[in-house]
Amino acid sequence: LVVGCAHPINISQLEDQADYAGDKVSKTVAYVITDAQKQEEVISPGGGGDKVSYYPYRDLEKTIRSVLGSVYDDVYAINSTTDTKAIESNNIQLIYVPVISTSSSSESMFTWPPTKFTVNLSCSVSDAKGKNVVNVMVSGDGVAEFSEFKSDFGLSARRASTDLGNNFAAAIRKEEVIK
Image (cartoon, rainbow, N blue to C red; front, top):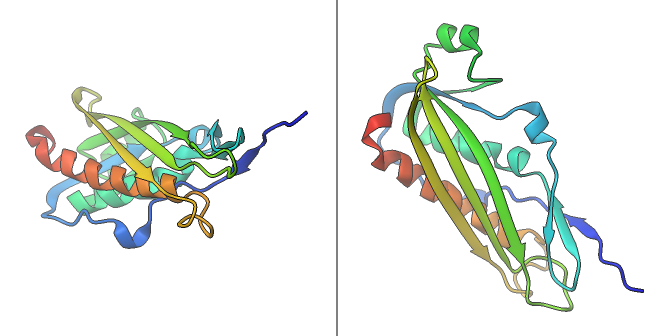
């Protein structure tokens, strides 16, 4: 009997490949990622019948914060969209609420790291009073071959997260209503 297992990987972006610099928008924004979301573990397919495990909200919070910080003057993390004290005291104008989903796969029967990885991000953006302004939806894709991921088993995932960050920044800059 052969039983697959879940190997932990990190899906944080590759720092040296994030490229979302651009003109800043003079607004103060916040994002909501709860402590419970940071503890949510996802298990998805790897190769060889094995699975991989990771924490999307924990691993991608830095990417979300960095992207928002590259677009807006000030960025805060708040606990909920109804945290009126934080919203008012920090003069927050827009609130991003991300929903993250992922998928992974590998055609390899002999190695467990995923060779293909996708991260989907759907952010509802509301004003300080809670009225929805826009929904921003983007995805990021990453691939990695065995010869590349020998020292970084989550490489395809990290490439997907980097692609996601770049796409997220571009999508925000295209939305006139949140500038």
